[in-house]
Image (cartoon, rainbow, N blue to C red; front, side, top):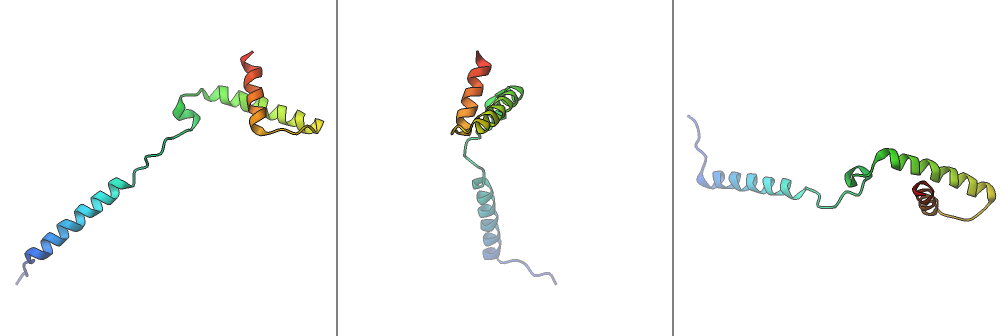
Amino acid sequence: MPVEKKPAQKAAKKATKKIAVKKKAKKKSSSKINSPKAQGVNDSLTGKIGEVAYFLYLKREAAGVFGTAEGDWLEAENLLNQ
């Protein structure tokens, strides 16, 4: 003899399904993506800038001059844009 579910059990089951669906919807990230691909920057250009920045870093280290990676990157951009 099959046992019928009580109306309270059916309502509780529906409520848990609705909560699970709401939790899944909240997991989406609202943060912006700042990768070069998302911004539409040409990958070959960033690769070239990175290469030049690396060589500038090596040159700076060999000379014993203080500097930062950001400074090397900006200088590489300036050199390539001339």
